[in-house]
Amino acid sequence: MAVAVVVAAGRGERLGHARPKALVPLLDRPLLAWSLEALLAVRPLGRLVVVLPAGEELPADPAAWGLTPGAWDGPDGRPRVTAVPGGAERSHSVRAGLAACGDGPPGEPVLVHDGARPLVTPQIVRDCLLPIAQGADAAIAAAPVVDTVKQADGDAGGLPRVVRTVDRSRLWAVQTPQVFRRAALEAALAQPDDVLAAATDDASLVEAAGGDVRLVPCPRTNLKVTVPEDLHLAGLLLADLRQNPGPC
Image (cartoon, rainbow, N blue to C red; front, side):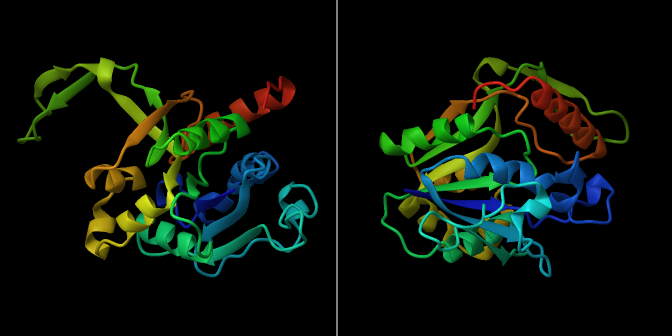
């Protein structure tokens, strides 16, 4: 079995909404509910901990978020989905979520997902779990970079000056889910708070410690909602999927 930490504690100022980002409406449910629906469909995920902004809670009835009634409960009747408040930075929230998952064996897969990626699918989740079973320390969803990438110097009173064109053939845009061998993630999150605060993603902490981190090719549609344009695009893509559902 595996456990999952869903990071949804961001305030989302760039989205320009009064509600925390993960709770902003997307079609007929909160943004976060779309990710939860996909994760709940993956049987190996025995427990999900949602990290929410302080003062926010999951609804008592998941149907209030458009999810199946009883979705918070596991097959044994015990809670499968619970929530905890987040920390000051993303990695602090992941650490709080992992602690709420309870103890587990060193090789247990721990999945970390951004609640602001509503187009994740059960198949993407299953694909990211597989490398851990094959011995990797971490496996991360990613899409090959397709745009031409330029490196530029700082703005010295004018427009940035191009230094070089970067070879994009070896570049990947990182997404979530990111799945870790529990011992590798626990060691990474045990570092000082300032180190965690500087990390842009959890896999970089494992990578810096010399861990075996693998990339799992995923579609660019597994986007993260950050600005209003992202929310609009996610709504269009989800509406299309509703009309033309593919394999899950």
